Length: 179
Image (cartoon, rainbow, N blue to C red; front, side, top):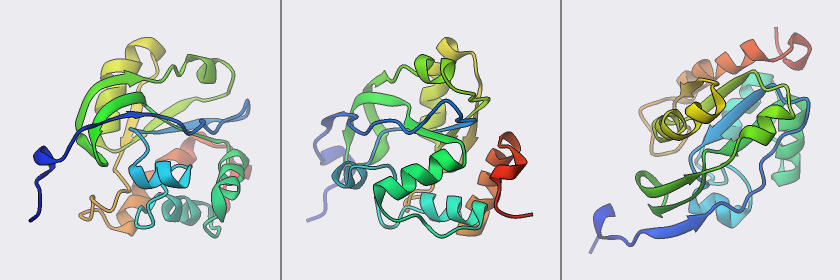
């Protein structure tokens, strides 16, 4: 018997994956909260069907970097910071629409100690949570991008890549791997 999301238990989840950034980061990409697969893998966008890493690899004309450390180096080399809006919440599985009692991450130290000029959110839930809880603190509006989750099947890899191309506007030209 299949259970609906409302019948599944809501889990209390605490974010345990360190943010990726350094003083040279120019763009901040924010998801909502790592999925169970990402938490299991110990790094962002760890679900094998999530298209996040495929999209970034296409944007920069590179192969998908192997392993967590390869992905971390890839992000830093391209001056991209990566984190999530939430520090903790109650959630059913990976269903962002089920989030209750969100507690947001403090973005102030990252923003103050880097060159981040643009914030992007990956999905509607991250956009809404950022708008409600983070924007009043940061004063930096976020640009909403579509989710790369397999649940967002309506958005093809080509459409996702085109939408994510907006991040390139905030990166130095020598940072981009194609003409």
